Amino acid sequence: MNTRAIKAIIQRDLRIITKTKGVLWPMIIVPLVMLVVVPTIILVIPAVELGIASELDELGAMIGSLPEGLRQSLASYTPEQQWIVVTVLYLLAPMYLIAPLMVASVIAADSFAGEKERKTLEALLYTPTTDLELYLAKLLSAWLPAVAIAWIGFVIYGLVVNIGGWPVMRRVFFPNLTWVLLAVWVSPAIAAFSLGVSVLVSVRVSSFQEAYQMGAIVVVLVVALMIGQLAGVLVFSPGLVAVMGAVLWAVDAVLLWVGGRSFQRGQVLARI
Image (cartoon, rainbow, N blue to C red; front, top):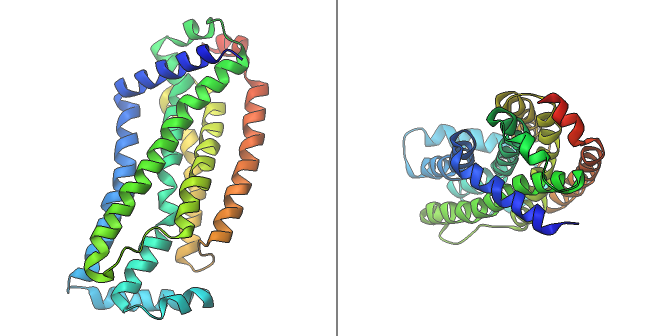
């Protein structure tokens, strides 16, 4: 395995990412909205009088649909504290996964389709690397930034919710075990899943926009999780998150194996 060549390709791709606005801006805006703006708005609600009664009434109805164990754990909190705990620790948990998913999808879409548009893919395909080395380099150049942003976002989210929730909670309440598992176990897995799908698509289409739009379909999975939580069908718990991560890693292994087997630079060159 030519690790020097893989490292050189990764460094090259990372330099391109920082100079490509169509890739860089979604990497900044999506995590900023999901992990800073949304929790800040939610934390402000208990602090304002207008509309708080109706919000808490809706919260009470939602808590009634939650599992018995979770309802008991919320019994010691005031209604305002329940609002923060339920929304910040549970309802927003699936939303956190959108950040690594979208970042991986954007970079992976650019990894081949973007190279085709910039007319730089042909020169890259002629580099002295094997198909597997080139494929791994492209995967890592998308996966590493996605995981880094997920972990940085986890820290920023923790600061936002603990500082913003302090006037009501009066203690540091984030993270719990579920969120730690989301950050270290599930977010790398969902980033790998996203880029596995996106790279397969990106190799076969001719433009970055096509690859990005088709690859972003995987966001539907996260939306389904959010709807499931809102409906009380499922609640993120350490056990559920651990199983979710294991399933994702298993699917990742299959996707990456299929991608590695199907990636052949001769076929990619034929599509340029």
